[in-house]
Structures are given as C-alpha cells and as structure tokens.
Length: 621
Image (cartoon, rainbow, N blue to C red):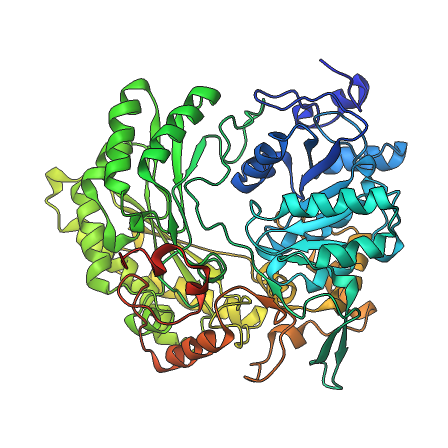
C-alpha cells in the first residue's frame, strides 16, 4: 500500500478507518507529473453516502480517462476524525494520493442536499482553505459546485469560486482549457473567473452584485463586467446513449448505502409533478439505447463482483424498452445469483410479471408514492393517479404474493385541507381491504402497510415556487391529524405511520429558497458546531435559530409568504430550459385542480424542446 496521510495510531482510533485509506477495487492510481491538472471530487457527507452517488463516479471515470488529468476523491470525515485533524493540524487529504486537498487545482463539491451546507464549510476548514472565495489567491484550488442544489446557489455563493449549472459531462474540457491557458499566461484569479464565466453553464458569483428592496425582496441583479452573460444556461447531454459512462465503478472495502451496480436507463421524466424539482431541471426525457445498456450491465457486473443491479431513473416504468431490458437481465444474470432492483415504478404501470421475477417476495416490500390521499389533491400536484389505479396496482401485487407495502405521501401541499389529510389514512385502509379480499388460504400472512409522510418544500423551478411553507407546528398538527385518522381505520393493526422531522424540513426550505444573505448564517451555525445536519442525531435546531438571530436574518421571510408573480427570485438568472411562464401556467392550473397531460401524451410548451433531443422529438420521424 502507498503512503497514508494518517498514522496507524490515528486509524486505529477512528470509526471505519477504511473510509480514509483509499486503494479500493478499481480505484485509479496515476503517477503525478508537473503539468497534470489535479481535480479533487468532493461529496460533503460520509464516505458511505458519497460513494453511493452515481454522478460522482461517472465524472471520476470521465476525468481519469484523460492522461493529463488526475481526479481524486474526498468526503466529510466523521466527527471523530474531524476533531483529530483540527487538533493535530493535519490537512484534509484525497484518498488516491493522500495529498492535501489544498494542493489541487480544483475542488469540485457535489451539492446534492441543502442540509449538507455546513459540511461544505467543514471540508474547507479541514482543507485549510479560506471560507470566503474573496480571500483566496492562486495558492488555493478553484472551488466549484455542481448538482441539484446549484440551481439556487445563492445561499452558499460566497463560499464558491464557480458553479457548474447542468449535467457534468458537457463543458468541463473547455473549463480546464481556459484554466490551463490562464495559469500559463499568469492571469489573476479574477481574470480567470471572468474568462470562465463566459463558458456556457459556468457561473462565477463574485462577478455579480445583488441589491434589495426595503422589504427584503431582490431589487436588481447586475453584472460587474460587460462580457459575462446576464443569464447562465443549463448544460444538457443530448446523446445519453453515447455519453461518458463508467465501466469500472470503485468497489469500497466497507458497506455503503447503495452497495450494488447502478445502471442509468434514462434522464428526465415525462410526468410533470408540480412539486418535483428534478422533473423540471432534468428535462427533456432522454432514453438510453437498450443494446448499449445490455453491454454496460455486463461490464459493470463483471468489473465489480456485485450481486445486485439497480436500474436508475426518475420513473423506470416510462422507459420504453423496460420489458426487453429486464427480460434480458433476468435471462442473463438471475441464474448467476444476481438480483435485479427496479426502483421508481409507478403504481399505475405496475408489471406483476416483471416484479415477480426480479424480487424475492419473502424478503421484499413494494414501494409506491401516491403523494396525496385524495383525488382532488393528486390533481393539484398533477400526479396523474386515480384511486382505482392505486387499488388495482396494489391488488395485483397482493395476488402475486406480496403483503408488505410502503406508501409515501406529502403533507403541507398547496390548498391542502383536513379532508385531504384524513384521505391518506383512508387510502391506506382501502389498500388493506383489498388485501383481505383475497381468500385467507391464498394470503402470505398479515398485511403490513407502512405510511410515511414528508413535509412539502416549494423548491425552485417548480410550479409551486411561489407558494409558502407551513410552520413547524402546522406541519406537526397535520401529521397528528393523519396519525389520529390511521388509528380510527378498520384495519389499523395492519397500518404503521411515520413522519419526517418538521424543523429539518423548514430549514431545508429556507436554504432551498434563500439568497446570498444566508451565507453568514450558515457560517455562524457551523462555528457553533452544526455539522451533519442531514443526520437526525447530529441536527441541532436551536443552534440554527441562534445563528439566524445573531445575524439579524428572519428565516420566515424565505418560507412564510406567498411570493408575488412579479417577484425576482434569487435563482431567476439561471435558464434551465423550462420557462418561468410555463411554471406560472402550471401554478394556476394547480390552483384550479386541472391536470396537465404527460409529455408523451401532448406537448405543453414548457420550453425544453429548445435542446432538440429526447421525448420532444422522439415521435417526429
């Protein structure tokens, strides 16, 4: 084994030392040369979470295919190692070379979840990189962020030099070329940022200024230099079949969250659920060629030794070659001890034959996401499911041998009434009734239905981005209404109800909808000890409350009000392809309870056809 940044003594003291030693199966090891561009890929959460992220592995493989680029990895160290690194002044290091992160050219941070924002500051502090981008010179790496949270980067904008808006496979080569050119010419850091900002999809926050009205809303957003763009265009992979993909995923020594091969079958979603940010920012829907997927599945399994393969997409049922692909996988691998996982199946497109072949019915449960209990509420959110669809799908599952079902709903959705909340319990009971309609001798024991409710967050680039959130008490009151209703159902012994933490959801909403004034709140919270906020055992809401108070920021400003239709949003400078006008139309249709057909049924003019690819064009020839 090569050199290690940590001594054996330290490794023996920390939990799961394999998080920090590298050298996993399929890890890339390169000899570092003077002209090599070094990119450190960061996921600001524990190793087990970050190594389960497909996008990070794809970019890692893509970068390392180039001889003059070396991409390495770093993750948030656990609290135990965090304290040791600070106490001994050991700089945070990358896994491959074990070199300090601060010595790299780029530090690329994946922004997957708002509740990881304090972990970003942990990475910077432990790497001995200044928190504020304005305080960095060329002795520090360019800090660049990308991922879903980059679609409103403003709350963390002051910590980053750059953001990449879009799918990572598109313009990094151009960015690296500009970087090499700037360094060779001796450009200042700001001159490089100005050049980088002219690359489509790249956002340099320090080159823009924001002013505010007295009421706290945005007055104007201006650019500091004439040559940089007014808006940043999301970058989209047009040909997903032939886009870069990993053939040799890294196989960790320790168990990770997604301990399996992941095969991405398509990007985007045709459904148009009005609460779903991913359904907007990943448009248009683009499918991978099934023959290419068959080849990739074989290579991935061969090169990893995993015993499970999962098909990844926002809505697997909408992949048009799903039956052909699954039939191939079953025939090719099922007899070799490889299990096949099919997440993201819609209950109205449930295929009993397929599911019975790919899951062990004695061990697995089926997961459905009606999102709302009443038909009225499902129409508001454009879910496109009727109660008949749900009961019919559950009935097919029960008749096929399943007796465990997980149901996911949201509380606090726009226009929600108490009747809509109670309908969640009633729907779950109706599903149980459908199970007990099966003759007793044909059942597999007692029916088990687990109801889980999350709380609604009006995310940017959704039809609900104008809406407000419930308060913490309002969220909990709604959960208690559902809980009481569950207890009153005839089949209550077959029903179990769980709900998410309301204070975490509120903070998530603030961060998702916030502006640049939140950066100092995040820093204050981190300095008070907030870290791993996505983990229940680590989250400390009181410290966050103190951080807002000390900075004179009212968190309620971001989530307690319905925003006017002409208000400038912090994220309005980003062009995701889907127009604000379309989202506003969907907002009004939601309030009227009007369904919008999915993209294959009829084009609704969202704007994503500008990309000239995907579902917008698949039936034109």
